Length: 111
Length: 85
Image 1: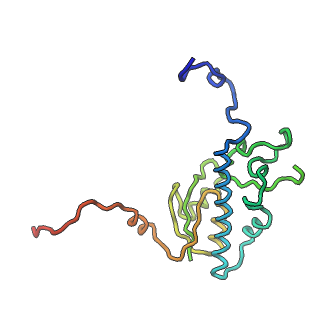
Image 2: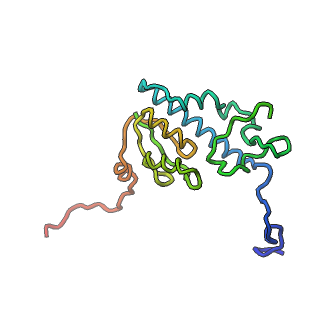
Image 3: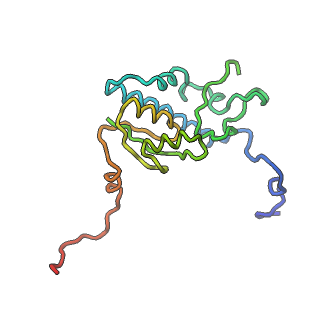
């Protein structure tokens, strides 16, 4: 009953989702670090332009105006995303494909 | 003034725009670093791939060859003299 051929739900075959519903504290930590890296990058981009006295870039300014920083977000918004099919209209962000390379911080109001 | 851009994540599986943008920035592999002059267009390019890169703001430029020579470990031997023949 031990080893690689033990009888468990995944080895019995069929489609079985093995990622848990909740993120671990380590996944959350890395998620926070990734978000902070994006915030830092945005700051540096506009800092560089400012130092050289260049015009602001529209996309970056729009992003700054519309998107909250990691430090300003609630835990709910950091680790879950809007999902119409889920109970409570939220699912873990780790269920989103390519989630470590996406920035999703704006959700419908009230959800 | 330069953006020191280091690729931290791959663009595999993402839309082609991402890998194209990385190529324009001179990035091909994870942990590659390139110095990009600060300008509106370069800021826009880096913004496009902000999740894949790490950025620092620096004053001086370093060429890829320069970075490579700095990364080289010492050979471990010192040549004191060479024979004439």
